[in-house]
Image (tube, rainbow, N blue to C red; front, side, top):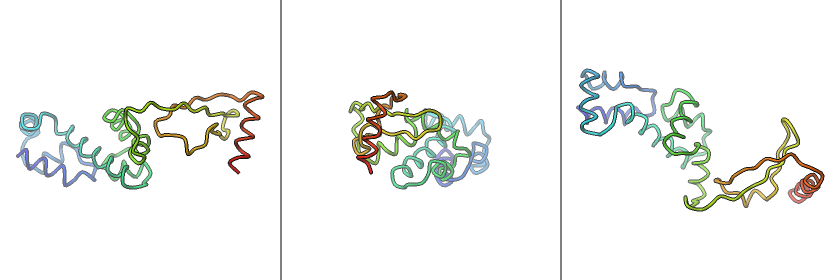
Length: 162
């Protein structure tokens, strides 16, 4: 029965299934399934559903350029908010950071660079002080409001990028 439940979960990972769907698919009571599942797998049915969804999401993040909201729906999550929360809990970083980290092959033990980003107030365009080619996905971002010297530096960076 646990094997049937695992197979059902794997076959329906892309859909928004829940424990009641697995119970119906396997044909036993929820309590019996939960007890047997915990003894055999060491976790809950819902935990396994979430793990399979996150595995699918990680695969999509590594192999495609789909937007995060598409990755969440293709992985069986009913909302982006739930997806982000589950992903951050499991991976200790956002889906976007995971994608950048995975696609660039950055070693997990490398320390991040510090980047200073200037903003000219509310709703303004932000200009990085260092070229984007030197920015790693795990960089720390520090925001500053530009002073007289910073404004000149921003103009110089903008001219160099043109």
